[in-house]
Image 1 (cartoon, one colour):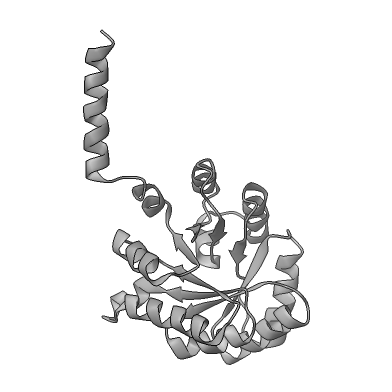
Image 2 (tube, rainbow, N blue to C red; image 1 turned 180 degrees about the vertical axis):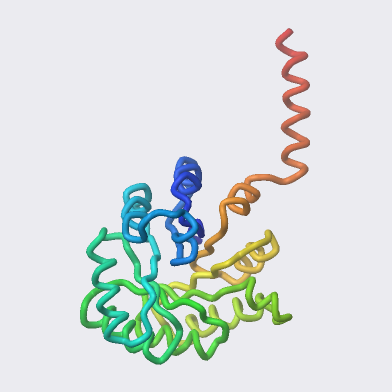
Length: 215
């Protein structure tokens, strides 16, 4: 499984990247706007820090506009992956970008298995299922995770399943059990994954014993 960070905060990206365990980045226009910096400049800076895929999105609605904006983003760095919306126009653009222009695409805002099927048929590099938004409306996000992986495996699609908007360790566990290809987490959850109460307890005990031994 690949591990992505979901942020536009370059300092958070540096901290996670320093662990040597970060495989890529997902971000969106809202996260970039929160930095107060120019959109394309932030994308370029992120791409200079992380060698893996950086999913970024310029907002457009018609297929031709999505393609045009994607070409601009792709010109920034070779590791840019263009996020496109799970819409008719978005999938038209995804098919053009992947199959005609050799530009990688991440179809985002997928909330059902049938949407995942359509997204995978475009040959999108990534298909992003969004977990926390489903939880907010009372749906079971783990079912979507299972169903999306099943669609991929049953029909031999090459798209990687990217589980996005994970907020808890239970989300991570659900993805681990289902076999998704990628999870994208906020910085807080990224570093929370390093810890377990028993690990902390055991290490504290070892430290205490060590201090006695070396005296």
